[in-house]
Length: 387
Ligand code: ADP
Ligand code: MG
Image (cartoon, rainbow, N blue to C red):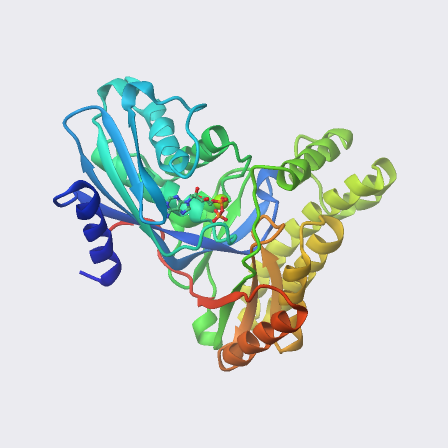
């Protein structure tokens, strides 16, 4: 048994005693490109990363759901008959929200389901823009679907995770994070069409090209549930309505002059980000296929400018991480995730990774910012049963 699985089993034993019925894991994700496009029915291109959340689970004879996490204090208990989506709070809202959302998909609802003990361990940093939340949701969803014998497919599991996050946690996020966590493959990104929900695995060819991704976690906090995220979402909906379309996905670069004429300056800039970002996702995938990984840098760089200037979701720390990486020779760099803090990513030649990381750390120290966590990530397999 590898170390992570051993830790998961040991943690389960320390909390509940004995061995779990099984162990499931799901990765965090990094979004290579396509930010704030998912809830606009657009395109995103995330990657499942080599950091995972593990759920060790065991069915119970009674109707109690018990959940515990090595990252957060306290065991939370609720009876399956009393799961109230409005009453769940804190970290336990993620796994228990999944249980609630999944019970809606079960024939006969919650009444036919058994109680469950769930123990979570993880090396996905929380709140860093790497979707630790989706890693929890997807690992829990796969575990519950298996142990409850529901046999749900991956698109179902993604929707259940999203429903838990939207309805129970109250974060109005799209389906990108769960799709990446469930569908990832080694050295592949997932091209996600958020309108049709079609997904396509696209070879990255990073290893062959001698390049890799560095994540720069600025360790500045963000919260999807409040303020900025919701207001950006409202602006996009407002822009679509005023332009007479169901979602911004219906618009392309040719529609920008009309949008400029019809919208106020701020709404126009929000809309322009989404329209151009959708195009950059498609351009990135096309460049990977025709020219290889080293050709996608400009799209990453342009994406950052768009988020800084038009969508206004970057921060001074994220801007420094990006400009610093670019000056140190990165092929491309951008903030990633919802914004307002969290992480940036840089595509670097393998031989440059050390210098780029050291240089960014130096620039942060000079600016008086909190020391960032800088680490490589590789595209990895999606959620799976481990044991
Ligand atoms: P992100 O998904 O970008 O990491 P979010 O704010 O969406 O940030 O989700 C972070 C939240 O997810 C944490 O505050 C916690 O409530 C929950 N979470 C993440 N990892 C774990 C974990 N290992 N155990 C329990 N809850 C977790
Ligand atoms: Mg999240």
